[in-house]
Amino acid sequence: MKAATHPVNNPVLFVDGEHEWQGISTMKSAETRAIDGIEHFVVRLEISAFTHPFYTGQKKIVDTAGRVEKFMRRYGDQSKK
Image 1: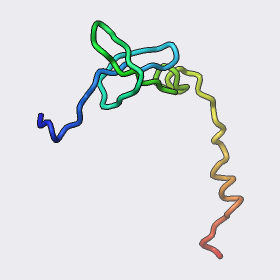
Image 2: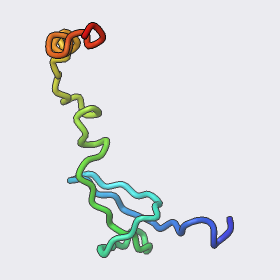
Image 3: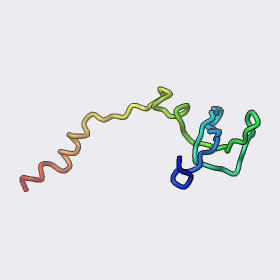
């Protein structure tokens, strides 16, 4: 790979609550942690596949029935006007 073309990848430790996993990213942070003698940048995440409601099965069911009917009642058929 050309050095001037591609960004530098760094070892990163992603942290989401109690879940941690290692990866490679262009992201950096002020916090670092040594894992097996290699300094990893620690990137804290608010949400990941470990905590996202879609992946955990805690997704709220949203009532979508009647949305088209509600739209049609509110705006009707504008082409007739």
